[in-house]
Amino acid sequence: MNPRWLQRMTGIGALSLGWVAAQAGPPDPAHTRLAMQIEYTQLAQAANSDGVEIRAGTTGMVGGWKVGVVSISRAPQGSTPDGTPANRAVLVVAGYPAGVPAELMLQAVAHDLVPAGGGLHRVLSISPGDAREKGRIAIARMPSQPGPASDQIVLYLPRGATLRLNGPDPHGASDMQVSNWGTDQSVDVEWRPAQFAPQDTDPADIKRAHLQVGSRIEVGALSLKLSAIEPKGVDHPQWLRFEASIVGGRR
Image (cartoon, rainbow, N blue to C red; front, top):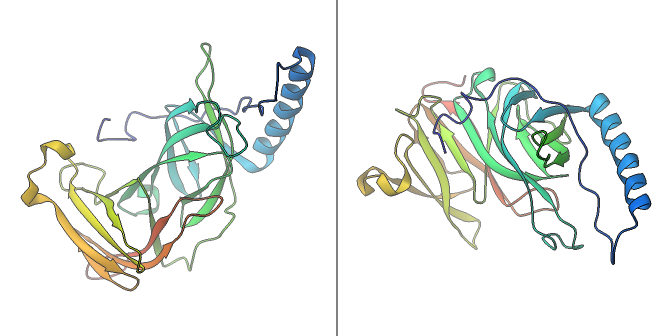
């Protein structure tokens, strides 16, 4: 993955047809076509009124933050509890337009909540595309869960995701991940120089910290206070919520 995740992504795409739930037994072609037409209409109406549409390989603005769609793929059959295939998107959410030196790379499926601009915005639909066009995603314009006061910077770090701090130039930036989720409302995090791949990083350059709610650490120019360790929900993974400020004063 190119460390400058967002620099090669430009423009805003349009929403196309999302997936249709698989049915038991061979599908009836006429029924399938009708179901696809109905879902297309519903998704198009939702996107036109409520959603920001972004094509794979491009960016869009959600909550005042830039969201880039790195890739979209169709998950294998049976990957969801009801046995239907789930389209999956790899996203990068960048706070630089709002003056926040942070990027979050994460995976999402339809109905997930994605942090952007301090609030949590719902993924309305994901289409994997086909040989003729790239996949597309629609994200709600308005947050399902609004952010805190406007003078507060909130950053999330989900399980399995990477939070880049003090970029966008990878020289001087750090990539943070959770290395261990404790059972006593504590976590272990580590961060390393962003310009190197993990296998090429000098172990001496990897910083680590054990955090509990209320703990504060400094990573470069950013001060991070762990405000919550939130368990996995129906619409988001397990994740950490930080209150961030610039060392020496809140931005």
